[in-house]
Every structure is written in C-alpha cells, then in structure tokens.
Length: 232
Length: 232
Image 1 (cartoon, rainbow over the protein chains, first blue to last red):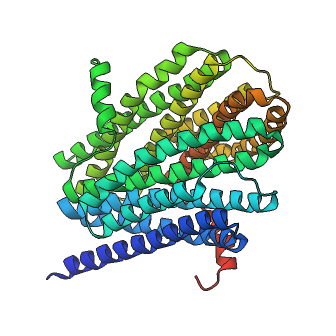
Image 2 (cartoon, rainbow over the protein chains, first blue to last red):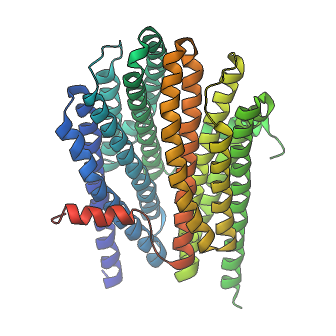
C-alpha cells in the first residue's frame, strides 16, 4: 500500500475516533442535563457547564481534520460521504451540547425555586429524546440505515408530546400566576429537548446519506415547493 | 490559463452567486417575518412560509457545489477558506430561514388573538437583529473584517434587551393571566430573534476566518476551559 494511502486511512480513522469521542461527550451532556432536571441534581448540572469547553475544542478539531482530508486528499464516493457526513454530524453535536447547557442552566434555576407539580411529564419526553440521540449515534457507528430511519419516526412523537405539554402549561400558569417563572423554565426545558430531538433527526438523515447515498433533507418540502412554485 | 483552472474559477463564481442568492432570500424572510409581527401583516407572514421550500433547495445546491469544489479540485489557502466558510454560512442561513418561519407562524397566531400592549419593544429588538443580519452578510460580500467585528459587539446588546424583556413579560403575564397565550407568542418571537442574532454572529465569525484566517469560534471559552481543565 503506498505511503500516501496509508496516511489517508490513518487520518480517516483519527477523524472517526474524534467524532466518536465528541458523540460520547455530547450524549453524556444530554443525559446529565435531563437527569439534573428530573432529580434536581445541582452537581450533574454543573458538570454539563464545565464540559462545554471540551465539546467546543473537539468540534474545532473534528472540523479541521475533516476539511484537511477533503481538501488535500481528494477522497472518492464512500469516503467522501463519510467525511462530509462527519462535518454535518459534528455541527449538530456541538449544537446539542449547547442545548444541554441551556437545560442545565434551567435545572439550576428550578432548584432555586419552590417545587411545583404541573401535570407535565418531563421524565417521559426526556427519555424519548435521549433514546433518539442514542439511536442516531448508534446508527452512525453501526452504519445501520434501519436504526436511523426509526429516529425519523420518533420525532413526530416528540412533537405531539410537546404540543400537549404546551397547552397544559398555559392552563397551569393561568391557574397559578405566581408560578409563571417556574412554568417558563419548564417550557424552555421542553423546547430545548425538542431542538435536541431535531438535531438527532438531522444526524439520522446524515447517516442515511452516508450509508445509502440518498439526500433525505427537505425531501417532502422540496417536492411540495416545486408543486407550489413552478417558476422557481 | 489551463482549462481545469478556468473551470474551477467558474465553479467558484457560481458558488458565490448561489450563496448570495441564498443570503438575499433569507434576509428578506427575516425582514418579512419581523414586519409581519410589528404590522400584523398576514400576507407577509404567509410569504415567509411559502418561500421556505426555495431556501431549502438552495441550501442543498450550495452544499453540493461547495463539497464538489473541495473534493475534486484541491483548492489552496484563500480559496479553501472561502469554500469552507461558504459551507458554514450556508448552514447558518438555512437555520435563520427556519427561525424566520417560526416567527411568521407566531405572527399569524398573534393576528388571531386580541391585541395586547405589554411594555415590550419588539420593533426595537427586531431592528437591531435585522441590522446584525445585514451587516454580517455585507461583511462577507465586501470581505470587511471591521464590519464583521461590529456584528460581534451587537450580540451583547441583543442579549441584554432579551433579559429585560423576559422580566417584563413575566410581570405582564402575572398581572394578566388571561393573556398568557399572547405573552408566550411574544416570548417565542424574541427567542427566535435572539437565535437569528446568534447565527448572524456565527456568520461574522466565519467572515473573520475567511478574511483573516483566524478561527475566532469559542476562543474565550477555549482559553477559560484550558485554565479550568488542565488535564483535558
């Protein structure tokens, strides 16, 4: 095997392991932030805040490595899809890390406030979102298109839970105006969970592109758009 | 000039003009969504929803062109920075487009509800955010590092406006629990504006990288993180 090729394979392996390290960090940040809310655990919330800098450093390293591979090695077909997917997944992971930080901050704010009991099932939606994140990352590691596809279906479940939650929360705040600050913290937590679910969906779409070579982004919208805007 | 090089320059020009078309579409979506809220203009809000498919199609075209340039042409130095910045800016623009859609949806919801008058200056924060978006995009076109830098400073102003707004909104909803649904729509609009400002800041950072070759992402956090986590 020529030296240049061996070098390319080594760099590709490095890219994969850095991206896996990034996945592990972010998955753990999501887990800790949700558990901090559910169990009112200040220490877990603080760990999420402390790990943010590490996530940010790793994001830059993954980006730099992917771009150098793209620009200097002329990868083809499967390798090219792997590298461009790595770039996109990396971006989604960094944003999921930011959202976990938002949730951890809300967890700390809620620990300061008197406990309230609105009929809102944060553990349920939290478990659902965590499950999506794990499946999306596992589907990348295992190159498992079926698993990636199952993430796309879960996203609708999160959306309907969020809508039900939103209506419950409005009634709760109208009944108990003095608890509006806590209600808004819960609202923010659910919105951040919903956005984490959206990023897990993006990752699953990238995995489908990587494994099958099909771009599933915006597919339905694009078709609808073409029907609506024939001159575009 | 050899054919291959001429071909590369043509593709690079195509990439730039597609990205400019994308910028124009998204800037106009942001403008229309804010104006739809401020002037309760249903038609403008609906235009934002109708244009989403076009933004999504253009995002995929810009991505494909940038990746094909990166992978097949081995660009160096300045061209490489232009192409990787185009990829990142494209991603931020697409998300800004999504956020404008969120705002347009809230504008439509508010048009259905009785008008309320909390002491919340949506036109002010809206104008500030629009100004950041325009400056960030202009700084890319003009390769103007100073203009990009001015976007980074505006982000703090948006953050403090948002905090003040948040407190005002809580008092308003506590005084008028029957207007909580409208209050939550306003809250969502301000959060979406804040996120648009964050993406304008990302774009300004990418422009600084493109023009000066300095990666300013997470710079402060990375330094703080190194101080905090010496073994990382």
